[in-house]
Image 1 (cartoon, helix red, strand yellow):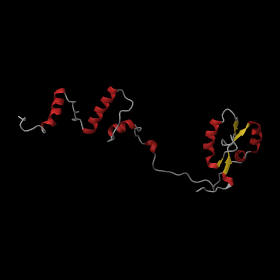
Image 2 (cartoon, rainbow, N blue to C red; image 1 turned 120 degrees about the horizontal axis):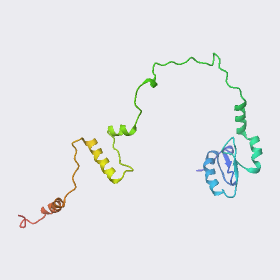
Image 3 (cartoon, helix red, strand yellow; image 1 turned 90 degrees about the vertical axis):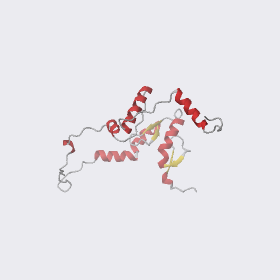
Image 4 (cartoon, rainbow, N blue to C red; image 1 turned 180 degrees about the horizontal axis):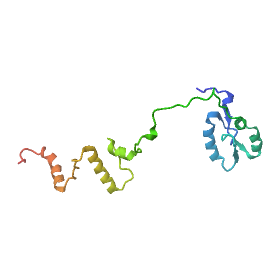
Length: 174
């Protein structure tokens, strides 16, 4: 179902006038067309609105008549706001002062090393990774935690035979 849009919401691409789109899609579209037409079309950026891309011959005329220029000129020439008793409010006093607290700066590494958080050894060499994992296991599971030793050749042979013992015929078991 195609939605109908008001003509005031539609704009043309400055690089190719055949490209017509919603005003809110223009910035995203310009990024694509800038790459496609970088060698063929040379556009200048308006100093008052970065969304205005103008061909060089029309640039001077645009800077004199740009709608956004009026906003900036109005801001530059308007007088600053006058503060008087009606517009000024009393200073707000507070009992709290966080500057006086003697608290150490937050260090995320120190916090993570003491909190119950799982950390990963990213960007470490293999030996550093092994030491990190060993230290993490001690931190998580307690000081008396010992790693499981890798099975020796004798243990591996026993574990390989053990499952098959149950399937041997009764006559061959001893």
